[in-house]
Image (cartoon, rainbow, N blue to C red):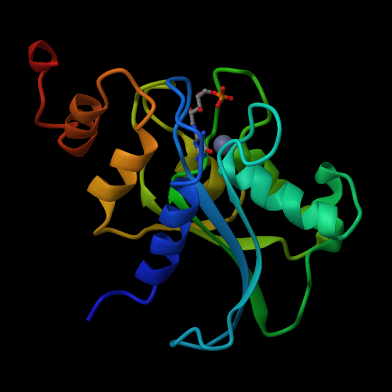
Length: 196
Ligand SMILES: Nc1nc(=O)c(N)c(NC[C@H](O)[C@H](O)[C@H](O)COP(=O)(O)O)[nH]1
Ligand SMILES: [Zn+2]
């Protein structure tokens, strides 16, 4: 009996596989949906948008594309996506991502945690919870802060285990020594430096 979140993480993984491999980021997939409260089988879920890394022009992240795609359909600029996300009593906005949303980006672009928290501005419900399949590996920003930043913003998050190897293999595909980076990321705690 697998967790009911697994099919959504798998959907995000198939999105991530469409991302062009690059050594300078991770290939990630994201799904935004509306979920009815107290609906344990998720049968009333409504998919609102999807996105994957570099789906849209420029150095774009999966979560960023997911929001931008929704904003485009509703004819508002990306930074006003919060205005057009549905606010429905008895339903919550949920995001699934293969990887923990970024709290910092080497490029200096707006991190996805900030894009997520902004959806709750102006007294709107915004994103209620984020589910992800792996924590961000230390490759670019060291110890990831996405989760703490979500907590600080009052947004729940949960790691859905079970697909780490698949998610990391896709994420690292464009990197120089991808297999080694996956092994390190999987065993991050046990692997000591001189093994890398
Ligand atoms: N959650 C997440 N979704 C993505 O689509 C993606 N590419 C990353 N990647 C996180 C990583 O920390 C950044 O990719 C590097 O920090 C480089 O920063 P840029 O991507 O160039 O802004 N993380
Ligand atoms: Zn990001």
